Image (tube, rainbow, N blue to C red; front, side):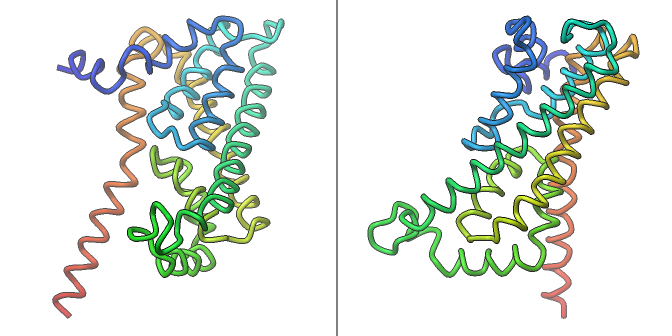
Length: 227
């Protein structure tokens, strides 16, 4: 049953192992480009989490190197480079939202003017000013959400110094944490022999925060109705 789910959750052209193998010596830099595109150009379907995990595992196995056999140094370099890519992608997404957002929100001429009204942007700005720093850090670990939270931050004109500060924290935690996880778990024989299953689990686990938050919101709504 698990084997049947793998092609559905990870199509061949999005399978991180296939992507890294296809990129060869350019694997790490290809992942850098994918991370920037996912975070900055809102390509939410790209496998960010599982790609970082796979990079860590490939470093552990000696597939990704910088001309040295010291995998520890390669891991450090990979974590730094991927963290910078994550922050850069977020910055691009923020400024796209900030520049393109206002024309889209014009009541009569904007494409999103009738759906995402200015008052929604104002409410979102209030949210980011009060709890947006937490959202920027936590959203980094949730697929789809991390892709659009930077756009919304830009549209709501969240203070850029605050945005870049907390976005950097989230980017480093994500880019370093998931890669290191792949590095150490990738040394386990079962994991690197069954990487497809491991990658599917990474995808499923990354959606747990969304499920938990949804359940909490529904409970809160029912409690308010009862009150």
